[in-house]
Image (cartoon, rainbow, N blue to C red; front, side, top):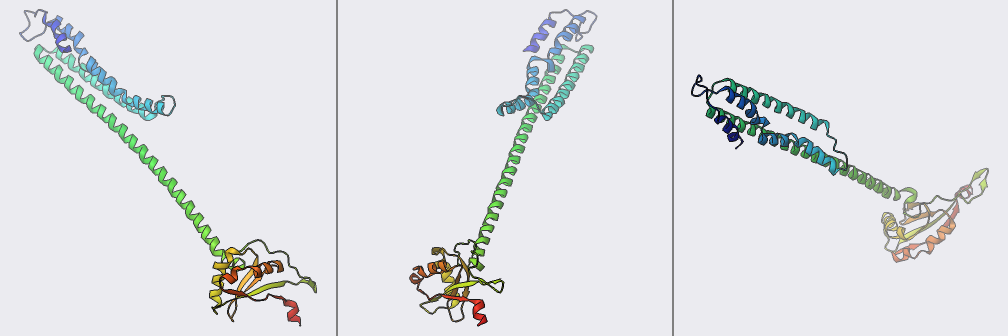
Amino acid sequence: MEEAGVFKKSSRTSRSPQSGAGSLTELTKMDLAMNVPERGLLGGVHRSRTGSVSSVGSAKSDSAAMASGKSSKRTRTDEDDECMMSVSVEAMKMITRRLNGLLMREKINRPVIEEVLSLASDYEGTIYKAMLENELLKGRLLELERERESMRKENLRREEVWKQERERDAIHMNEVATSKLGVSDMGMSQGKVGKDDGKKDDGKKVRKSYAVIVKSDKNESSEVVKERVLKEVSPWVNVRVRGVRKLKSGGVAIETASERELDSLRASAKFRQCGMNVELPLIFDVRSALGR
């Protein structure tokens, strides 16, 4: 042991005749003053402990910086931790120096001095171990904090994606619902209706109407016929329509945008395949009919 080496040197010194059996000579005191400080905080074993403890914070920050490809620049938190640790180590060094000074001033037997220093060394080792464990726990807490922050960001990202998908679904459902109303009743081509084909009458445009009457072979109601036209015929016919209106007599009236599209609608075999009849188109001039 290093302690044994310290006291071998002093054991060869002779005690002063004037001093008691347990007192130390001046040479022994000088020997202690030179060698005793090498025990404890300044000793080789605990000095290595000090180095390992004080370097925990810097080692963590350096390894993290190397992993990210950046320079090993310490953070303010690491510097604060090392500063606090340095203060604690200096305080323990001061206590050890005071203990060494007290042992040299008092007339104490060497076995007692050796036992006291051994206990002090064990105490220092316990303190260093606690400091090291504390640093390891702090590192683990920082790691858990980073993981929690990463999970929080991931949850926010998933929530945003889910929100966008929900908005897209709502827009799609709205478009589907809109396509079943008004001009888009048949779900056919939704291009703009061309300009009216009529001529001016008294300075006003006359709009012609092109329509066909569709009825079911089974004498179904106009509501049922309209639903069947929208579901069974609409996906297979590509014409522009102005509207689909139910008739009291049963069936529906489909008004197209032009005579050409009316002919296309009449020529479609899908009506016959679905058990529906298309009657001759009704081409009429509303204003002319009312003026007669």
